[in-house]
Length: 343
Image 1 (cartoon, rainbow, N blue to C red):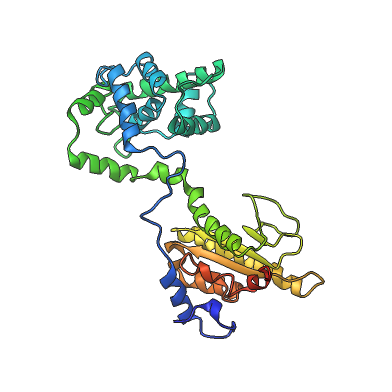
Image 2: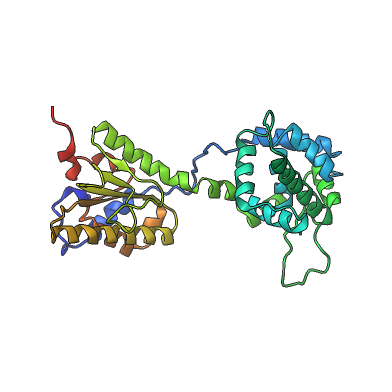
């Protein structure tokens, strides 16, 4: 089966076989995630949990003072505590600002959650304001867990604390800490929360870096000059800057758009960006500006959901569309081959 980048592109030709070849080379990324620096292995999480359990009499007394003592010993205990409450860092920040009257913005909560996961707070010199905010977050989580789920919640609503380990406050937390939970309960909680959900959100940008890093490797090995743009960077002449200019944005011979996604909506957004770049390239051909070739590097199941999306991206790139499986053909099958150093 031929790939669309191997032939002289004909916009009027039947595209179905080329769409098939691209679909077959796509690799769903559903079951793998990059770890990233903020990934917490189970052993570290368990250590922090045991520290919290030790300071709180087996999670029987999750008072603010006891929980803070645990956090001072192992900063990751704050992450464990918010997991017991079932809250994300921004959610805990909002509740802290409301319940404790201590202003904690979402940026602070996210940054410190990441720092605690990566490094902890031991041997850190913390400002008085940082300490005040962290202690307020601990005390807020403690109070929320202690209150448990209200008994008068309307039937059409579900309270976030109406779960096995917090339904009846500290009593529920202590019971599960000491006696565990039936496997079906664990599976139900997982069903509600989705496994790896928070980590998947935290590394969403790193997933895209898999493709971008692979493109960098290909260009570097071929000794081709390129300029990788920053996120949301503004470049004159482009409403949205492509991911790569080759060799640069001042006189590009090629631009490269890169994306890995399992989501059809995200794939559709990338198709629109590639089409817009193709329009800019076509306008360059009709003016004094030099035209450039548009190259797309895509992967993930999101691009296989709608064949019409793939057809649009193939037409916009005149077939110069590659996946991780075919990326090693990118240089030889595009204008990039003419940019390699001679000799």
